[in-house]
Length: 226
Image 1 (cartoon, rainbow, N blue to C red):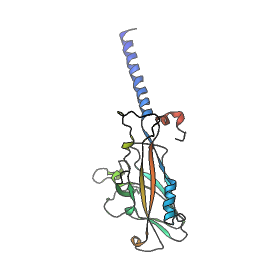
Image 2 (cartoon, rainbow, N blue to C red):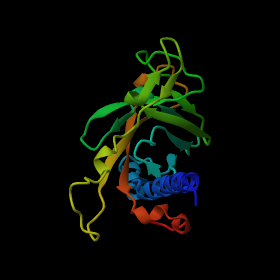
Image 3 (tube, rainbow, N blue to C red):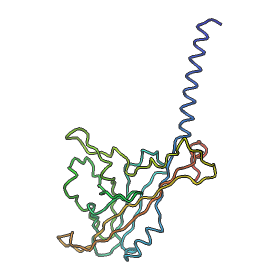
């Protein structure tokens, strides 16, 4: 073999090693699963006599990267036969694992407005369902000085779930997790003009974010329920 052949083989082996290293790194990347505590939500509704008046459904991905959870979509059904349901976004909040609270921001298409003015109520007629995307106020960033506001940061900081590489953890140890809460401000009425004077119901929806075991990234484990 000539010297050129050895160079070609060396380059080939380097390329293969780089591909294998990238594939192995993707297997070890931390994945997070986020689940709604259904029992907690049901207790919230029952304690305010809302279990037969409103229904929540959240659209969560099967798993997230640590920096991927930027937007959440919710479906809210008004089960009242006669009263209109209003979602008061300015009184709705995200409460993180440390108890810090910030406003929820509804994401209408092409939003360019300033964050300081009051948000418009979402209106749900009796028997109807509304589906909205929203995020936390701190997650938004404007493109340039006059561009669109877009979710550019995570809704909830999940960095604390990343294992410490310097700390040895037993394989049987419980994987890290944290809880956060979405608090929705609801008002029911029958055509009142001043919606801010309607009775206010605060419904807390509690979520748990947990690190998935690395084996979830193996292709044949994709459909397993972890």
